[in-house]
Length: 306
View (cartoon, rainbow, N blue to C red):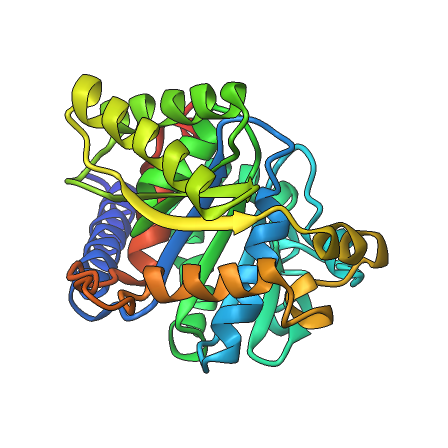
């Protein structure tokens, strides 16, 4: 073996050691929880709910990073009335640092625009991936929860985010087509989960009443249990509320504009459920695995492979 080949071999061994160290460290000490928010179809209010969920979590002292991971139609910044000049691609190519990319939405809430940078993760070699995770690693100490707002539909990109996260939160509405597509997502998640069982939960958005939300929940849970042998946690419902529509037109989170509206109270209940706070319910016992572990799992996902 010549000197050049030996040097490359040594570099490869060192890189593998670093990667494995990151994996072991994130499994043991990761304290940032990752929640992917997804839906079977568009038009169910997924991005809007993601933004307002972030605001509600921040209200009780949680520090939130909201990753806009919709490759087709990134619209979190539009919903919030803020402008994102840069995205994850600028961090990957080194032209901007993390603080230049993050957009502050509210106290303790920052948007991390994904844009084309999400897709560029597929082209990173291990050395650049480690460097990226190193730069993102500071979020582990600056935030408690990473919310990932994915694109609508059932495709590999969305499902990879769902299986990489600690919790997959599925959004549906009472519409029959939405329920059918939500079941389709559950079926694929059941078949594609990697690395052990994932927490899978769902919310019924735009419900006319608590009873309608519960009716949809029972239908979805029964179908998942009977045909998929899958237990899915019902996190609650969000009422259909004209204040939500008003806030969208103003381009501000309804949780900030109308904190006492019915939908805002439903979001607070959702936060309690996600954090294991409702009376009579045990808290989620699965510990968060951290940001580093999330990105390694994401990188290994099917949509990252050519």
